[in-house]
Length: 241
Length: 289
Image (tube, rainbow over all chains, first blue to last red; front, side, top):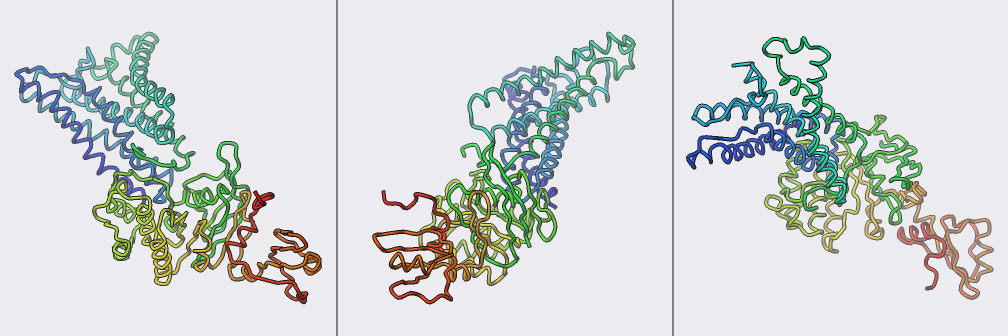
């Protein structure tokens, strides 16, 4: 009962925040250049999804951690609710990104499919759409997981050095993941050259990156779970106390 | 029945609770008393799953309360901890409470809010004064459908009129729907009339658990000439003795009422607050400055 009630609160909140944020970014990045006569739009859904996912995670934990402790929700249920809410956010964000990108393409904006960020990815049609959707979803999830972790630290510490360290760590994580994915691809193809001749859908490192970011998201969520289950209620929550 | 056995809690390396044992019966009003920093709030947090104990068990009708939502749904802690975003509106907060506990008494909340002149629909937590934040918390605590309500400093920041209104509201809601209230407060004199039983925490454990009436019957101040008082209280443990010239005043919980009172020696009762002060007084406290 408590899981459903808490998830309902989180999902309703995250849906509104997500739609508004992505909508606003789309207006600024895609439609605004059109008004100025430019038909060239940036395609940085990967950056947007990490940032929006991150913000979603921070806001989720800072909005609901106190309510969870105050209203008799167990730590286990809260962790499940956060994970489910992030999953919902990822699916929603990836779907909106896909739809908006298709709209942009349809109205003649000079942009490209989301999956095209993987240079050399030779999948077309459904494969391209699918990889784009999955890519945005896992990046949002990873951003959200890191956001949860950051939000938790902010709730429990107000010491500036730790906050700065946390920000640096959070900023580095996606880059480390990308680097890791490239090294992994290099390692796989060095050890097993036949991988280079995999069928079309698997013939580049796109799916490997998606998989590795997915693993990162799972690892961060596991860290959040481990931490959360050991926490006492914070003394107070809220941006301005 | 809520049974608390061997609860221990440390903050970093500092032990706060060192083996709390207590039994809380249904439909009674308890006072949880103790000096500052003795662990009252920590104990209430542990009971309501906000803090994790280092050791011990807490069961509600035989079922552990830790990470147990079924049990936690029967417990509610009202405290001054600001666990909600301060920009939240009261009506949203109440909606959340209703969604998570079910059965929130909206009619009673409206009635109490009207009495305390609090606008439940428009008020935001941040805009409320300390007193009105307490009132909002108290209203929610009195309207949740839980069987065990823990009130940690429920009159913090309230003026005398509002405190009186709160005590009346508490008794009225108790009469309408009897359930257990555990009140942790320092305003002992004010709540003494409400309480059935009292727990006194000292050095991280329950030092006294007793019915208030019986306790007040036991507590006595014996004063008179030192020799007579000493003779009268022979073999009796005293909480404190104050010697002034040849006169002696002794505070005790075990007055030998069956012994005849020597002439010149007086025997007076102690109220709950006096009892508490004498019971928890430490060496050197209250001495002349």
